[in-house]
Length: 448
Image (cartoon, rainbow, N blue to C red; front, side):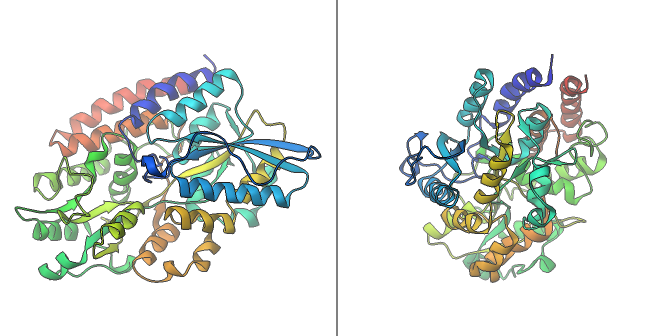
């Protein structure tokens, strides 16, 4: 079985298993948890841009963008129109592919793979770059992008897009998970919030304060377990493991034994288990538990700032808690060039355009997600002060991409299963050992 056949078989089964219950979309992945309510969606299909092809273009590029909300889609269309106006010899024909946070987008990619009609450039979920790259579905862009351009992106975007020392993808947006808190409840309980990375809470402080904040009518912390056993648990939860010196997989992405079942990884999941045992977190919270004041804190993504504002909540934001090393989640949708393209250089120009400073600002303003360009942070005043300065600090200083491995779909599913088992009070070491055996069996397909 060749790598593409392995990819099709493994990706279709394992990706759907990992994401079928995930409304987040990471990728964390439509855009790491963005809302995709009916009133915010647009019809799937070819995008009508304001710039029509004249017939004189030397190159026409097919471009797939993902749909999660009307504002986001309109931001992409605006930038595509600008690209077409700026480039007389290149014309982009874009198509919106629905991204419902489940399997629709991956179904479209799989169908196009089988039919051999992938576009020149497409959006893919950052953590899956290595799977696409290993299967030969996407191609590296190193020869078309210089170091000066690469250095314009936040480090985690380059980390996310790199597989076996080759760069495959670029993104316009990043993501993170912050510790949100209810200011009114904190004031009532006399708890002082951390206002910078230097003041970030330790695990012990999180536990102690979560206990104080927990009452008969309120939980101290929300981990959004209602999202199900999917990518959210890896995106949100893996920093517990990394902060404790643990890992999900080896550096080369090919071994989980000694990593997923390391003492450090098991200890981190047992800490998660203790949060539930102490009753400070609910196993089945409502979707708006934090916004309704029924949880004093919440580990959530940038989208929580939007929903908290809409709920007129008096909220704040703190850094992700840590044990030894300060680490935060990262990763979101990115763009890659498929092996189908006959115009890799022009396709790379489109990727760079769709992720440059202006695009990053446009997308950030439309989605609430942090920009992937360092200079964009300097241009957006809201990131200079609380609460959004916390998000900026994490993206620039503590962001950690999920592991680069061709077997990512099964690795992330294994971690999510273990995290969920910890929440249910199961024996973490026993569950981890079972998952390691499962992943090792699947890994054999990538070693042949």
